[in-house]
Length: 271
Image (cartoon, rainbow, N blue to C red; front, side, top):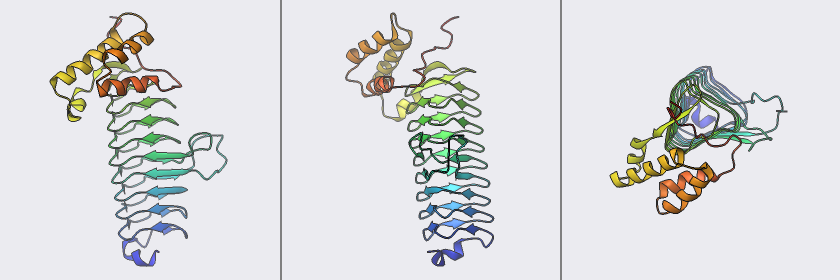
């Protein structure tokens, strides 16, 4: 398979026997591609990229210098099992980012969706799952088993505790420590994350009009600032807002079993 694409592979690159490289893939200077790696059409490794393990880069993925993808996880329980890494179409991984393969104690796969952007020095640990269109800024660290929903945005130098979840369309501020699950479309910030409100711009882009935004915002305020016990407010919101798809999405996220529970701390609530 390499013969048909030799002109696209720099002579200093090291390609192990068994690697599958589609015509049209580009492999730049000093890259290393392991024997179980699959590079689909249009993949580009700019230079000094290392890809190992059972790793698949789907069509149009672009990796910048000094990325490492599919290497062994930083997990002392790992014993060399054949686990996987998958990067979705058109995703871009910037300089010095590291993405580790899954583990058998997790799902066995680390998966990044389509059209994502992971900026410089991002770390994605074993068994993480990122949806489509996720943007992660410089120096962010995702612990093992973290889940990030579609179109979520994570600001620079944020850190997410292992097993935490971030809902679709959520925005995590820079320098934020996330130790509990963040509901879809929330905005959070703080040394220990606190809720700042909703990502209204993201909701507008999803097609919500002024009345729809007001209803979702009212549901959010009721859930996190209303009277009574949180579980009772969740049940009541399920009745009051049963016809609102975005509120139902939030409630479904809350209802999903969680290691750390839902982030309910509202910024300024104790002031």
